[in-house]
Length: 524
Image 1 (spheres, one colour):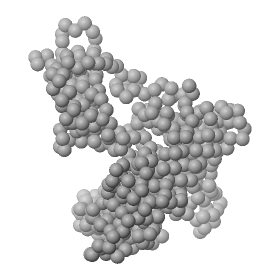
Image 2: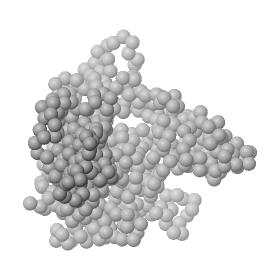
Image 3: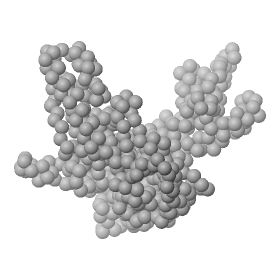
Image 4: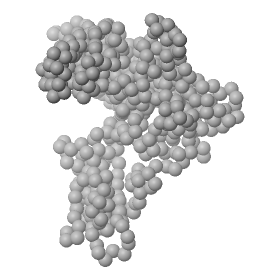
C-alpha cells in the first residue's frame, strides 16, 4: 500500500499503531487464539492461528493514511471473528471473505473514559461498594468493605523452599541457609566491596537462586539461622498444599501476610481474589492459612481479621503480643445495615455475603471486563441473607476440602508387576478418560470411576479442583536446581489419596449446586 500497510499483531498493538503513527483509518480483525488463558476462557478463544508455534492472540490490522479524509483522528473499525472456532474454521473464514470488504459487521469503536477500546467497563460497576482501596489500606479512609488486604507469598525460589515432603523441605532449606551464610562470610572477609556481591552470589549458588532482594539482604549483612519451626503448610494452588520454609529473610516478598497469618495456627480466614490485569477467568477461593502469590492469579487476599502487636505486652510471649482486630470497616457495616434496613446484620454475615455474591453468575457475566481490570466492587443484591447463607456454605466446603464428605467414586485396582507398593505418582501426570471425563486414571494399577459431569463445572483460577489435582500431583524435577518434588510424600497411603479425591469431587458438585441455586445478584 502506498498510504498504509497491514500487519499481524495483537489487538492492542494494532490499536496503538493506529494512534501513534497518525493513521486516518484502520480495520482491526481479531482472530483470537489466546492460549495464555485457561478453562472456559481458553476454549472460547479457539484455535491458535499459527498452530503450535503460537500462544498469543492474533489480529489483522489494515492501517491507512488518507490525506483527503473528511474526519479528524483515526477512525477505527473492529470485528471479532467469534467464540469457539477452530484454527481451520478461522482460516476458512479468511479465505471466504477475501478482503476487508468481505467482512460483515464492522463496528466503529472509540475509547471510554478508562481508555478501554474493547471489553469496555460497565458504568454501573462504579456504583457498587469497593472491596478494598489503597486509601483504606493506608488508614486514610474508611471507604471499603475491608481495611487491610495483601498479596500472597512470593518466594522467587519455589524449587528450593517448597516441597511436598517435610524432610525434603527441611533438607533443601538447610542448604539454602548454608549457601547464604557462606556468602555472608565471604562478603565480610572481602571488605564489603559492592562489586563483589554478584561474584560472591555466583560462587555460592549451588543450592539457592539469588535475586536482587536476597543480594540486598547480603549487603545489609542480615543474619539467618535454620529453624524447623519455619516449615509451614501453604495453600500453593487451589486445593493443593505444599510445605514451605517461610523465613522472611529468604523469601522475596511477604507483603502484609504477617498481619494476616502471623503463625501456622493463627485463627483467621481470607477471601482470595485475582490481582488486577489477570488473563484467567475471574475466580475466588477462601483460605484459612498462608497462601502463595499464584494461588489465584497474582492473589490479593482480604482477611476477616488482621493482627497487630499489642502495646505493653510481654515481648517473650509472641502469642500474647498479638491482638486480633476486625478487618471489616464500620462504614461497610453501616452501609449494609442501612441498605437492607436491618440492624442485625453483622460483620461475619457481610464476610459470608461477599464470598457468596462474588460467585453469582449474573454478576460475573455482566462485569467480566471490569473484574479483569480492577478489584471487585460489591453490589447490594436484592436478597442479602440468601447470599450470606450461600457464602457460609461455600466457605465450609472450600475450607474443609481435606476433611469434608466424600463422593462415592468407585476404585478399580489391578495387580501389576513392577508397581512399587505405596507409590501413587510417577513423572507422568494422572489423566481423565471415559465419556464426560468420568474416570480418573491415577497409575497403571488404580482408577477411580463414577466422576459426575458436575465435578468439572466449578473452576477456580482456570481449572476445576480435580484439574488442579491432576496438574500438581506428579513427580517433577527442577531443571535449574535438580531438586525433585515427590507428591508420594504427601498422602499416608492409597486410601488417604482416594478419600482426598472423593472429597474434591464432592465439594465440586456441591459448589455447582449452590451456585446454580443463587438468586439474582443484580437489581432488575
